[in-house]
Length: 165
Image (cartoon, rainbow, N blue to C red):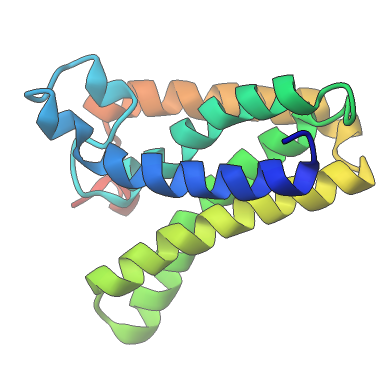
């Protein structure tokens, strides 16, 4: 499985499965403090962004290792994909709830699926075009910053809507 296309399809499946299971890990571990840094600790939109961020980050290490000979600049597209998918969750969620005036479990699940598809579509297209490479340091810095925000805001969230249940 060295092709970009097959690795992308495998990645979509991986993130959908691991992201879905991630929703329950904090509870399964007896609300372990350390686990909370990587898995949602509540039902806020912010915590749901972890469902894509960490599984895709994990898969990105595999994908980079697997494809680096064929696609030496895949790192930047992977980071762009992580960011695109992660920010898609609140964008889609607040758009549909703003239009409908409420949220539903089915649309919440479809929001996650759409975010994963957005993430891997961005990664695939940017890998093929090599356009993200010149932004690699900005992308890396942003991914690291977002990860640090997840760590800090898990147990010390700001008092804004994104962090409310």
